[in-house]
Structures are given as C-alpha cells and as structure tokens.
Length: 78
Length: 252
Image (cartoon, rainbow over the protein chains, first blue to last red):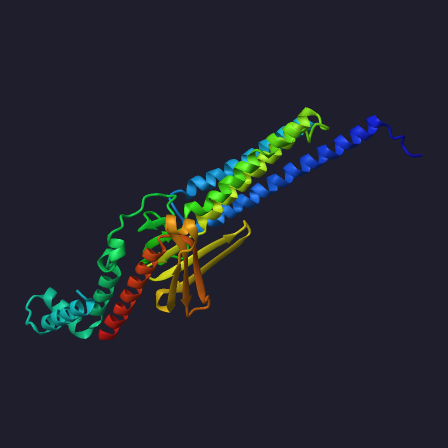
C-alpha cells in the first residue's frame, strides 16, 4: 500500500530533503575547517613568521564559527 | 678586503706565535696548540666568512633596511622569519611573495561572491523556501565565501620564495592539501632570467624570475615578484660571493 501524495506531503518531503542537504553541507564545512586548521599548522611550521600565531588563531576561530553555524542551523531547521 | 688576505695574515700570526719564545705555562700551552694543530687558523677564517654580513658584499642589500612588515611581498633581511629546514648559521636575506597587485583579482571575485545572495533575493530565487531556510542557506553561502577568502590569503602568505646566504627555497602550497618545497644551493645556479611583462607588471614593477639549476629541480620560478631586476642583481652578487668563498677555501 503506497502513501497518498498530497501537495502538503510533497512540500514536507521537499523541505525535509532541503533540511538534510543543508545540515549535511554544514557538517562537511565543519570537516573542511579541521582540514584547513591542519594545513595552517603545516604552513606555519614550514615558514615561521611573527604572524604565525595569529594565523593559527584565525584557523581556530574558523572552526569555532563552523561549530556554531552547524548548531544554529540544527536549531533553526528542526 | 678579500678574506684571502685576512687568512694569510692570520696564518702568519699563528706562525710567528709558534716561533716566539715563551716562558709562562699558559703561553706554552697556546704555543703547543698553534704548532701541533694548524686547524684553528682555518676555523677562524670559516667563522669570519660565516659572520660576514650581507651588506658587506651586496650593494643591493646595503640600500635596503631590514623589513619589519609582516605582509610585505618584498622583504629584505626580514626579522624573526625562518623556515623549517634552516641551518643554524644560515641567514634569510630576502623573502618574496607574489606582488599584492596580482591579488586584486581575488578581491573582485570575493566582492562578487558577497553580493550573490543579494542578487538571489532580489530575483526571488529562494522564495519557494521558508524564511528560516533562506537564512540558513545565506549563512552557508557566506561561510563558503569566508573560507575562500581565508584560503586565498593563506595561499598568498605562505607561498614564498626565500633567498638565504646558502640556498634559494621555493615554498608552494597548491590548494590546501598539496605542499611542495624545493631547495637549490647557490653553487648550483646556472642561469637567471627576469621577465617583466604587461601593463601592470611595468607600472608596478613586478615580474617572473626563472632560475636554472644543476640540481634535482632544474628550474625555479619566482612568479610575479616585486622588483625582479633588483632580485636578479642581488642573486648575481650572491653568486660572486660564493665564487669568492670557493677561492678562499682553495687558498687555505
């Protein structure tokens, strides 16, 4: 027995898909920020400048923003 | 004065010290060292050579003040700047990055990307979604723009060309997952070519420097660096100094 497709159920299916896609995108972004942080670590060890510490802080801030964005997206979309 | 003359003076001094009659125990000890081991004289010359400041043999660097600017594309004698495989007695003499003018295109790209959601909202492309979904989509877009900006900056800041008193180093980070660092000793440099091309290159004095070497990496390319003719002049002075050091070693 197949469920009956009404305009409302199609809407909720579409929104559910978009919701999942957005959350998956934010999760991927969070993973990317960790890779970027690792790359920053390699870069600052390769060329050591007075700004290296600040670059690492920017990388950490980037990760923090990604975590907060994922949390915000989860709360807003659910 | 060329080191060869200094070193001959030093060896003469050592010889005369060995021949001078001494009476105290301390003096006798130094005499024995001077006679039995001629190496200290050679070591002294080596130390003198290593301690030689770049301003002594480079007219290009003599005119330059040590760079304190962290974001300089042309940083002569940069302070507090090192690299991972730097030798203990190796000095970074010149650090180069791509000219800031070459990064302007990225600024325009980023500005364009910032206005994409504004355009989308104006056209109403996301109107089929509830407001909270649109908010999250815009947030995601701006995060992507932020990370792109960070990557552009990191790529410019850490893709550097370093000239030391021993080597040239080309540090390349392609994307965020690929690192390539090439080294070549100054002795291995065979040919240097500087090219300044285009309107922007001529006006803002930046261009490419190609360095042919005899090492494993046969060509180094310093792309879009500021003052290419000045860099080539400095490299030539370094090569002359290397030749002079070789002659000094043979003389010793």
